[in-house]
Length: 166
Image (cartoon, rainbow, N blue to C red; front, side):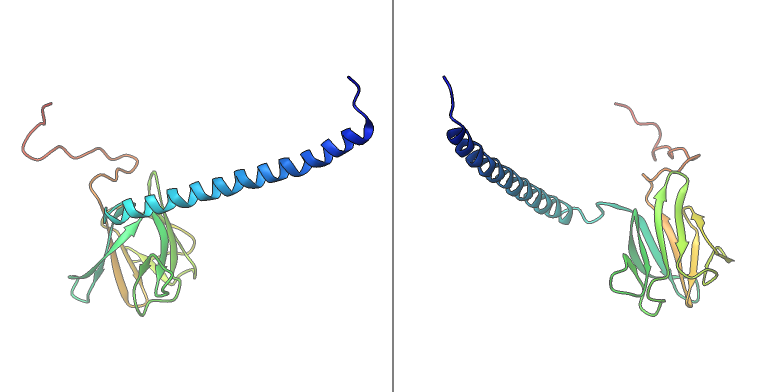
């Protein structure tokens, strides 16, 4: 069976648009699936108040007492801006960026020397562990990691009340 050039041209022209329509349909379906998955994830996380958190930042007052507790995500920004993950009114707009790594919480200040960790000014980077204090703009924050967040070189604490049996 021989196909004429005109018939072949018409089929090729139609197939070009058929595959374009098929590709657009697949992309729309993919975007729809991603949106639905994001909505489901948001709903699940809303039901779990500490999901995605590694601990808390305790805002300390002048006497060293806890004035407020702020949730600590695994990575984020510290500052006074409304876009910061750890927001303290009166602090510089964007004070520092931090991220949890294997050996501790790596903190990088936006302005070198404006932040102190455990009393030492930070120029480029500092590694914080549980109990470390961060001072900036007259405010002091203490990092308190959850018990399940194990850093390099640490071992899990034994369960209270003796050994657990299965």
